[in-house]
Image (cartoon, rainbow over all chains, first blue to last red; front, side):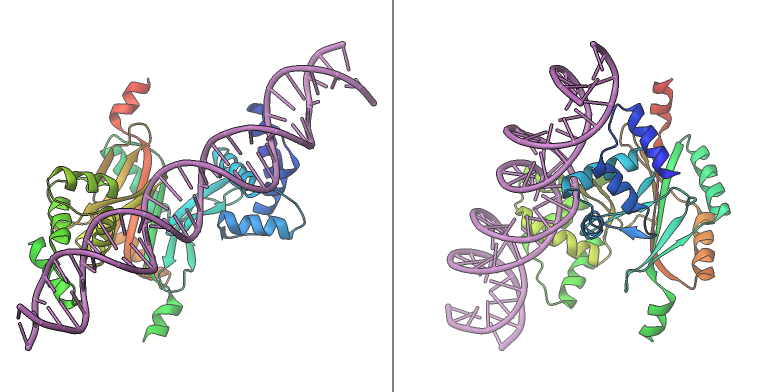
Length: 143
Length: 143
DNA sequence: ACTGAAACTGAGATTGAATTGCAATTTAAC
DNA sequence: GTTAAATTGCAATTCAATCTCAGTTTCAGT
């Protein structure tokens, strides 16, 4: 599981699995959904563990580096992350009215993108598709 | 052309087409490609016009609001913009090695996204697709 | 267990893009 | 022209993110 993956990753880099790093890891995987670094920091505090803001940021970078966490998007106010282990790849729709984030996945879309990369002699490794608009709820509310 | 569009937009909002705003507008449309606010600010200075950083930022927001300019992406170091008037919609591939930005467009992709929105009862208004990887040049260089 | 070198941490300082407050200036309607 | 409203630039501010560095922890070697 993610704990093992992270420890292996740290080992390979000569880094140490400290309390703080493990606390961040656990907290990231203790819930589902998207989060901002500050929110994560507060959760950790609240959970009785301790890790400074600096450590949260530092660990978050490590988690992204080893593929357990992904940077979803950048808002006006900062980065948004999500954990990816156990989650297959997906893209996002974001409601401009309420901020809700809907995840979706389309095989066709993935294939089409591979095609497009090939056409451009581009070796795509990752992608981010973000559709903005209004979710069902906010669409109704408007009218 | 863009000048007229911007002036109309300003007029409707009771805003004034000042030298500074027009300088920003002209400079944005004086070249093709992507830019950062700071780069734009320097270009304006260099062109002999004058507009403070504050005015550049303020005007850029107006240009985005009226649809002449689009925020392409947010990097570690800030926003990247492009002018959109006269440019049809497209998406981007960004080379992680050299930073090159390749634009592409696919009708199929657009349609597929509309389908996906419909499936999720989502009213999509805009989207951003960013494929990251290595461009042809950097792929070759690597081997 | 001990020891020491290397890795790590937290608090606060720092950075840098972006925004804002405000006094002075410009605009344009009358 | 005159004047009210809009605009400007500077400097101050904001805020996420990063960095500094002295003190702390980890762990391999003994």
